[in-house]
Amino acid sequence: MANDFSREEIVLFDQVLEGFNDACIATKMSKVFMTNQQTMERTGDQIWRPQPYIMTSYTGNDMSSNFKDVTQLSVPVSINQQQVVPFQLTARELRDQQQEGRLGRSAKDKLASDINVALTNTAALQGSIVIKRTVAATGFDDIALCDSTMTVLGVPMDSRVYGASPSDYNNMASNLASRVLDNSKSLKAYERAYIGEVAGFDTYKLNYGYRLPAKTAVTVAIQDTGDLAYVPVGHTVTAAGISVNTDNRYMNIAITVGSGTVAVGDAFTINAVNAVHHITKQSTGLLKTFRVAAIVSGSGGSGVVTITPPIIAPNNSFPSTLQYQNVDAAAVDGATLTFLNTVAAYANPFWYGDAMEIIPGRLMPAEASGMAIMRGTTDDGIELTMTRQGLIDTLNTKYRFDTIFGTSCLNPELAGIELFSQT
Image (tube, rainbow, N blue to C red):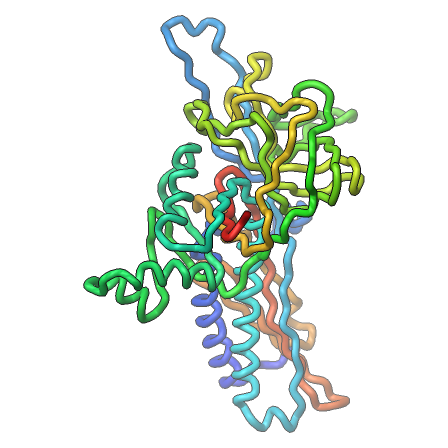
C-alpha cells in the first residue's frame, strides 16, 4: 500500500499548489482548453480543434452563382510536454522539515516558469505578425503600433495581451514614469516599473523571453515556377478512402539563397505580396509578414522551407480561398524575400486571447504501488502531482513534482512579435 503523507507534507503541497496557481502567468494570458483524459490517451494525446469560420459576402440580389461550399478548418493540439522536478532527501536532512518546504517552493517556481516559457516561446516562434522597430522600446507608441496593425488586419479588438522582456518592459515603464506624477498609473510605473493596460493590451513583464537571432541569409528568392499560392482544405482522403484532417497553418515553398542560411523563426516579407483585412478582404497596403516554421530540405544555396501563414490569394475556382484570403496577390517565381530580424533581440510576443491555448493533462500513477501520491488543480485547470517513495537500503526519500500540458498557436495570423533596435 502507498504510504500516507505527513501533515507537514500536506500543508507543504497546499502551499506549493497555491503558489503554483499564482505563478502560472501563461494561463492568465491565454485560453485553457480542458480535454477528456481518457479520450486523449486513446488518441495519442492529440485532438483537432476547429478554427473560426470566415464567411464571404457578395453585392446585389441575385446570388445564383454564389452558393458555394464552406470549408471548416481545424488544427491539431496535443499534450506533449511533461515537466518534472525530482529530488531526494536523506534521513538526516529530513530532520529539518524546512528542507522539504524550500525545495517544494523551488519546484513550484520552476514548473510554473516552464509553462510560462513554453507558451510564450510558442507565440514567439509561430506568431506571424511581425512589428519591426528601429529604436529601443519607448512606451505607448510601441504597443499602439501593435494595436493599429492588428486592427487593420481585422483581428478582434478584445482580449489582447502583450508580453515584454524585462528590459523592454522597463523602458516602456520609464516612459510612463517620466510623465508628471499626478496620477496613480504614472506613480505605479515609477515605484514598481508597472504599466498595466496600454493601447488595448493587457501587458505582462516576462522574466524570461525568446531571443530571436539575427538573420544570416542575405539574398533569398522564391524558386517555384509560376504563381505561388495555397488552397485551404478541410481534409484529404487517403488511398484507403480514409478522411484525414489537414493543418492549414503552414505551406512549403522552394527558395534560392544567395549567401548565408535561412533559420527557423526568421521573419520576412515577400515582394509585392500585401496583407488584406481578414473580414473585408481589402488590401491594407502593408506587406504581409511570414515566419520560417521548419527547414524541409537543403541548406545554403537552395532548398524547401515551411512558412506560416500560407499565402492564400483569391481564386474563384476554389471557394475556400475567398473565405480565408490573407494576401492581395499570389507570390511569383523569383520574388525576393526581405528578412526583418536584422539584429538579435528579444521577440516580445503579443496575441488575441483565443489564438494561444494551453492544454492541461493529468498523470494517473497507480495508487497501490508503494508510492504516496497527492494531486491538485489550479484555478485554471493545470494539475500538479507530488509523489513520494522511500528507499529502505539508504533511508533516503525520493520526491517528484510533475505537470503535463501542451501549448498551441491555433491561428498564427492572430499572434505576433515586436522586435526592437533593428536596422
